[in-house]
Length: 80
Image 1 (cartoon, rainbow, N blue to C red):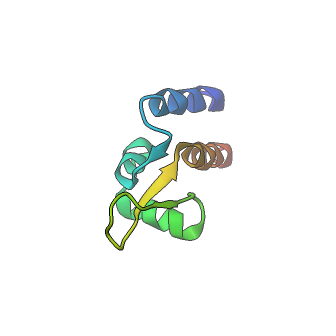
Image 2: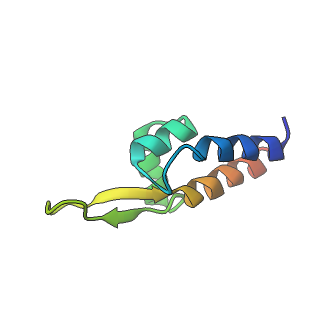
């Protein structure tokens, strides 16, 4: 399978998801644990956006789908 085919497969997968992903959705797409998603965000490899969905003090985290694409693309490029 070529890099282009792998990226097309990821894009097909992301088409069924919203533009802003939850940590759980991101973990499912990348086939990694939620803990690893948090580590990738802490390392700056995945962008995170804090969204205040309710009046709670703690905001919800969302990950832009484009950030997932960029990370996955870097993984594919480094696998060569």
